Length: 191
Image (cartoon, rainbow, N blue to C red; front, side, top):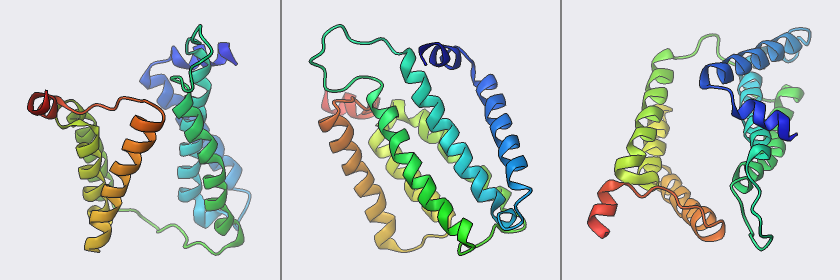
């Protein structure tokens, strides 16, 4: 597993995208024979993408150096492995309604403007980590994406980002001792 982790860790972004493309092509080929699953092809491929990226991060964690002392509760591998373990049952639970035919089928054609906006906001969010920090950047990202996806409930638009920031703070900063970027703006203000 260590060698596989080192192999994938050594690949650039372009090769990672090629691997993802191969996984999606194989997923599409596996779905085609099942007429019952064809209406959910897009949703299944999104689940396959999420699982592939989770598996990729999981495998890469085996290439991380192991601390020499055993008293460490968490390492750099803890969070990616935890998320992968969570992704498996969540993806399975999302797949069950599709298997039963109870899920809303894919639309014939998606909205490319929405995709572009979400992708652009994601890039801006990642770039803004350096300046406004993870917490504020992720909260703004969630509000914008929820708005783009037609969520207009004011309580949800406030509660989801606030709950995410609180969860992130307590789970990562307090429980796992992972320092998330606070940004140059807040570092300058608070020292």
